[in-house]
Image (cartoon, rainbow, N blue to C red; front, side, top):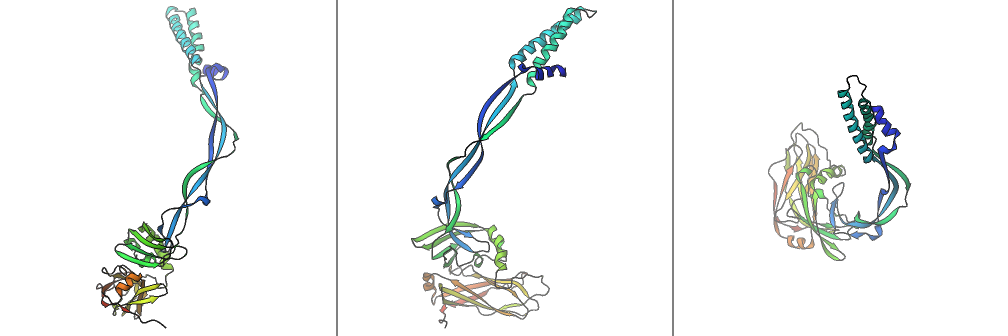
Length: 369
């Protein structure tokens, strides 16, 4: 039976109907931002690779789409239904004649038998052939001239926010600092987030008041805690203290002296200076030693981290932290009585569990020569 079907599919063109349709379809779309038309979006605060904070204005640019199209001919080969109908009828008639011939002629010489075989031989190819070899081909032609059209607005980088100072409020604390010409904030995120334990802060909701030439602007954003984890290693690699952490073989003996707090003047404005003398009486070294500042009644200095790092057996250190404060906060702190605690922590949990406490007046440091 297969050779007969091939007679239709190969030898007879009436089994199929061929249709040709010319189509044009895009094969490449390139979107080009138009930087000259950049529009600044509301400013935000971003976290750098090593914990630096930066105020920026995200930019959105109009775009132009360059669409390259190609013309092609779609050739569709489908069944010829008229041929199928003829084949179906011929097959049915041939089948009836063959059955009649076989029933009526015991010797096989009845003409109905031969007519039935002939009917089947002609009808089957025409009934089956139209459904074999159907396909759709796409025959490409020349590529057309690219068409340019307006595209949607899209992000196209950012630019530094022009500002001089900023005060960030987050988690009940105040962080005051200057802003440089590149939008960089003078206070690292790791003065608030413990670089030795960055995962302890899942996220950081930030609201900031930024002093710009046009007046005060408000910035609100959320910094993902995963960013602190990624940038902590780079911060520690560039740190000026010994960041090594080695296995504990002997327990250190950390003792703290008297915590001092004073108001001082710096090139960037007023600041609170915290100094904590420390000694390691041994017998082992301390690793990743740092202090968490707790001053819930004084948001301007609350929540800071003082880093000491590795402290060898018998070594002493003056842990010092200078916290810039706003002029208004400096006025409120001058000669005021405040309470501060510092919780000491280290890599192996051997630091004293009792916080170092200060309660007293914030005196003003004598000007340095």
